[in-house]
Image 1 (cartoon, helix red, strand yellow):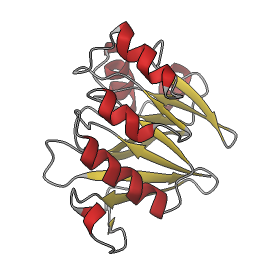
Image 2: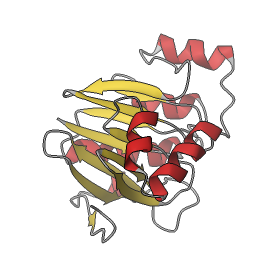
Image 3: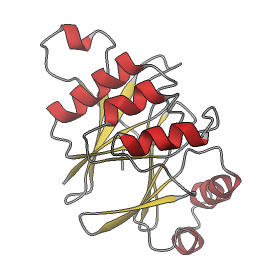
Amino acid sequence: MILGILSDTHGNAAITASAVQVLKAVGAEAFIHCGDVGGAAVLDELAGLRAWFVWGNTDEPEPRLALYARSIGLTPPTGVPLRVQLAGHTLAVFHGHESRFARLADLAEAGDANRTEAAVDGARYVLFGHTHTRYDVRAGAVRFINPGALHRARIHSVATLDLRRDALRFWHVDAQRAKHSDAPREFPWAGST
């Protein structure tokens, strides 16, 4: 199964539509938005897809927006991390601004694989956004992934994760892509593990 990962859309439905188009073109079957959604227009782009999302630090998860998400077939998150089961793997999804995530990221950056694995309670992947920077780091059996951002980034990007092969790829998203028929462009990523 190929998972499409996007983040930090900040209300821009047009670039979200382009991102979803890129992810579908490269085989994504399910989608996770790692926060800073930015409103109903972005949620509309996820409607009808097998998709999950978390709220970010710029989102205001008011009850009306949560009701709207439900009305279009999405399930608003009730806590962090959001835990998703796909292809036999557990994914923990954060936005990345949460204090719990900061402690977890510190463990991973310190190379403390045992404490990192214990802290994620069986998750194989930790997905997050917030920094607007692509990221791929392993801490023992746990892989931390940030797809980059679709707002306030020099290069807009998303990622695909082939859960059967543990293969991660980053993809360029052009806001004008919907007007072009060119194939998606992959980012060579020296930081990948």
